[in-house]
Length: 193
Image (cartoon, rainbow, N blue to C red; front, side, top):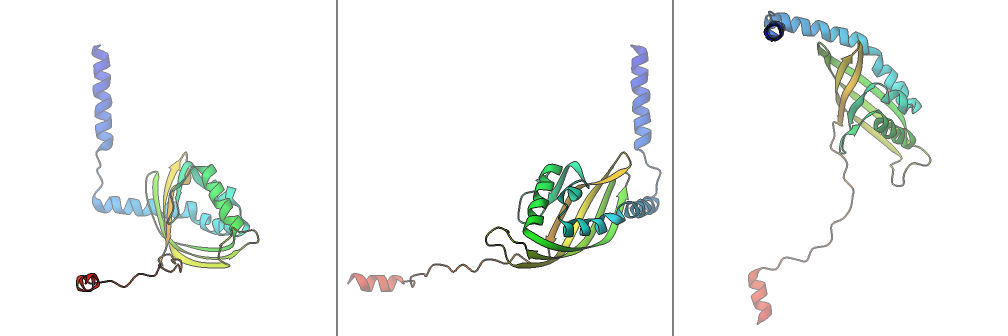
């Protein structure tokens, strides 16, 4: 019993010592910048490959950059969770539009196994034959994105990707039903007479 308590105390002490940081804020900032540069080097080819995958309709290649339970969070819809769901979502997009996607990474930061990438994109799409009814003939979009990268076993994968356009969505041109002219209380009382 005594030995078990010493082991527990020693383990807690080692954990406490590991949690204490001897970095100054400037040292931490320099380390994070250096780790961000390493993240950039490790994932710099992903954006170029992603552009090719989008043009070729390779939904499986896009999905495989994500963690098993990764999340893609497109605008105006619920998150798409897990590789299989991401593959299905990307396959629907590929079946709808012939895509030209340009991705411009702008900054990287990393701290151990956690990385963040921020950037912008432009998208040009032409509707394919067989696209769902009501699909516009072409779409043009530009916006920004944020990626949460996670390093597991030395491999960076996307844990979460969120992106949204710089412009608000175009609303439909539905017309509102005609309204009856408003009647004032004075008009109502004249009608009663």
